[in-house]
Amino acid sequence: SQEHAKSTGGQTSKNDNPRKLSHKLMFEITLHGFLLWASMGLLMPIGILTIRMSNRAECGRRLKILFYIHAISQTLSVLLATAGAVISFKNFNNSFNNNHQRIGVTLYGLIWLQALIGFSRPYRGSKARSIWFFVHWILGTGVSLLGILSIYTGLQAYHEKTSRKISLWTTMFTAEICFITFFYLFQDKWIYIQKQGVILSNELIRPTAINEVICASEKKKEFATESC
Ligand code: HEM
Ligand code: HEM
Image (cartoon, rainbow, N blue to C red; front, top):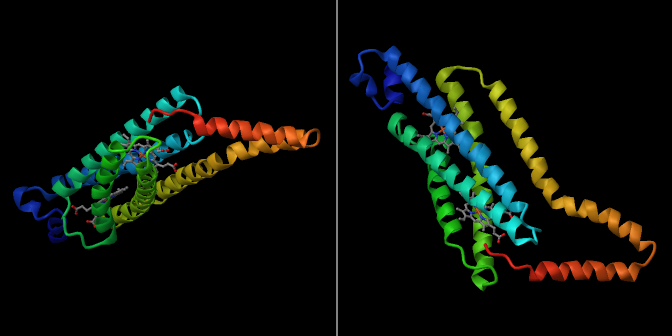
């Protein structure tokens, strides 16, 4: 009970029934975990996969839709993480003496910074856009990876606090991450896979003509007008 009081910031003194508080804390830990999984383990990776689908989008409308899905899912992700953060600050011990707590608190700050950077982007075509993209890309990818790590350490902390089994959750989350990673890598290869067939079958007939076709489509990409 003393240990319990410590973990809840000494709130036992406010409550005569520690068993009831334990249920409350249990609920809050679960909610904290669920919100942060939904935010950084689901919405954020989905938002990244979506905007990556726009890498080769030439049509303005398709690009716009993918951009809106990215912006909305990432904003929602920041809001859910903030709700999870409020729950943890209010109910956990705020001692920040282990890696889950320290990395977690850094992440709370970084995702807000990332969203602000996302909203204050220079126009496509301006020089500053390249720098902006580099910063947004590296911070976004880094934050997302740290988020995945935090979900694993969070599950470990849950196990230590509650002695409940976490193997099912860990396995399910690992399966989800494998699927997302596969899709992420596949995105880079999709056009390449398609091109294989095209180049090979035509190369045998008229190699020069094919070069022209590729150059023409590359030019088109360069001049594609994009509004976001
Ligand atoms: C990206 C995801 C996550 C982030 C950023 C995060 C962040 C944090 C932070 C900052 C704290 C310390 C709060 C305080 O003391 O005021 C904390 C505590 C805690 N979190 Fe998470 N969390 C995440 C995911 C999870 C998950 C998935 C679980 C699993 C249920 C979880 C379980 C816990 C537990 C049990 C504590 C108390 C740990 C302790 O006192 O040592 N967290 N979290
Ligand atoms: C925490 C929130 C966010 C994260 C983690 C995030 C992450 C990312 C990442 C990793 C990329 C690069 C994808 C790639 O090509 O590999 C990206 C691109 C982009 N993000 Fe975000 N983002 C966030 C919020 C936002 C917001 C709020 C906006 C705008 C309102 C935004 C606008 C964009 C745009 C326009 C691109 C594409 C840039 C281009 O291809 O020129 N992002 N984001």
